[in-house]
Length: 264
Image (tube, rainbow, N blue to C red):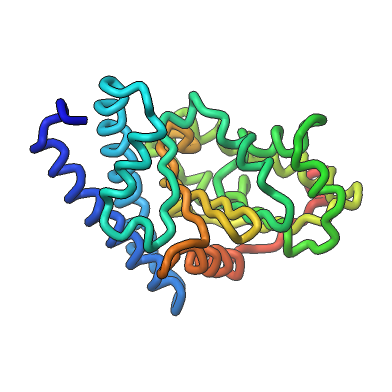
C-alpha cells in the first residue's frame, strides 16, 4: 500500500466515508417511514459510486499485495465507524468469486432476499448437492424464507427502455425462470413466501439468519454481479443490521402477493 498515491488514497477515503455515512442515514430514515423514490435513487447512486471506486482502489492494492484478505481487513479498519456499524467485509470482483455458494452454506434459521431476477441464486439454492437443501426441507415457517423479485409483467420491466438495453428482456425472462422454479417448490410443499414489486430496487439485499446482511447496488444494465458487495454482521455498538432487516420488512409490506399457480 505504501506505493499507492497518497492523494488517491485520501480522495478514496474521504469519498468512501461520505458515501457510507449518507447511505446509512438513508437506511435509518427508512426505520420510521418508507423511502421516497428520490431517496431510493440517491441510496442506489451512493452505493454504486462507492462500489465502483472501491473496485478501482482494490485493483490498485491487489496489484501490489499478494495477501488480499489482510489488505481488505486493514482497509475496513481505516474506514471511520466501520466496525461500530458492523461492516465485516467488502467482496470485490463478484464474477470471480463463489460467495453465493458460501452464503447459502450459512443458512440454518432464516433467509431474506430482494433482487431483480435471482438468476444466479435460485439454481444454486435448489441444486441437488446444495447445502441449503437441509434448511429448505426442515423449514416449517414461511416467514423464515422470504424472497422478493421484480414483477416480470410489471410496468417497470415494460418501460425499462434504453437504460436496460438488451439486458432488460433477458432479466425479465430470468425472473420468470426463477419464479417457475419457486412455484414448483411451493406446489411440492416447500414453506416459502414470495412477493413481487414493480419498481427498480435501490439495493439487492440478502439477509441470512438475521445475523448477516449482504447488500449491493443494483444495475440497470445487468443484475449487478460485477459490482462489489458489502457484508454487515450483528456486531458493534451501533450495528446497521437491524435497520437493514427493518428496511427489508418495509419493502415486503409494499410488495404484492405471488400467485404461484400462474407459473406452473
